[in-house]
Image (tube, rainbow, N blue to C red):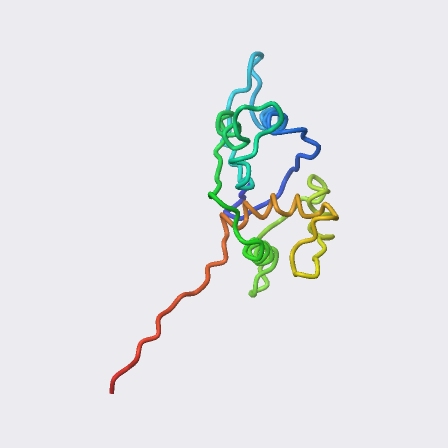
Amino acid sequence: MLRLGLPCAVTEIINAYDTPDMIRIIKERFWLYDGNDYRKVREIYIYPDASGDSRKSSNASTTDIAQLKQAGFNVVVNSSNPPVKDRVNSMNAMFCNANGERRYKVNVKRCPLYAESLEQQVWDEKGEPDKKSGNDHPNDAGGYFIVKQFPIVKPTGRVTSLRI
């Protein structure tokens, strides 16, 4: 969520079986149940892995991203995932930038797995996040949101010659 324009991790969902289960959990937590169905009382934005546009949950005839959209969520996703280094640099800059500003807050009591994953991320010999430890999944999930909303903008310029 955003608070005063800055990101805050305030809850996590773990052990969701598949996309329909994730949809159910999100609606239970954030929408109002009227006795028959869940009624949207706030907008939910989801920043998934781009591969969800081709991946289908078990026994589903539609992609994961299509299911999220059909559920009434706002899905923000590019056709491909951003480079890992861009995602990591954006995350690091939000945690503490060159000016010493800490702009991304994580509620460690409500997001214990995410906090642990951020603290325990291991890197392989190629400089990529280690996929064996399992710590990369929560970090990837948080990173898709951060890199989309708070990308590192690379300065561009043009050099021209000056005639005297």
